[in-house]
Image (cartoon, rainbow, N blue to C red; front, side):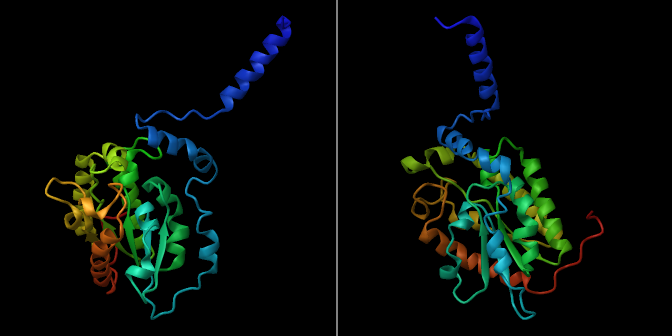
Length: 261
């Protein structure tokens, strides 16, 4: 039999250790719960994941006056995009990080975009916010993050291309949770806001959604195996649309409007 004083000591130590373990609230989606639990160390130690591109940024030389440098900035869809294949001969820099939300992107925007001195940044973000990768967030708060990113870019003379959030589908077994955690009405609402904001603030709205959605309002089956991340066929549709949007930005960047702060 364990002496009472030793039992109490054990319970106190066990309780203290248990209390130190981070508690990750359930989202109701097992895959997302596992993902969030696996990211606790990142969320606590390097929320914006500045370490991901720190060395690459330091090694990158400043652009020449004649260089049309473009930074593609986003989440896993950007991260997985082989820009050198889609845009051969172009100095397009990939600064995507899988799983990120707009809150994380705002943290790293200065390091991964502003400091690289591009003429244009192509931003694709929001799908992971809707899913709740870093916790629940309402559409107005996502919009606020994107507004702040835009204002930072404009203050540094960087033109902004805001990409629409892509549709998702549930046509395959691996797509089911991605689809369920990204309600279509929220995607549409954010895309409407992005389009309106871009028109009001002299940004370019890049409509991937309209080119990739099917008659059911879902991502076309042949464009993604998991219902979310474009495959080669998906990127083949996106590339010329992105190129056209970039070309629209290469003139003078409009001055900030008097209503901006």
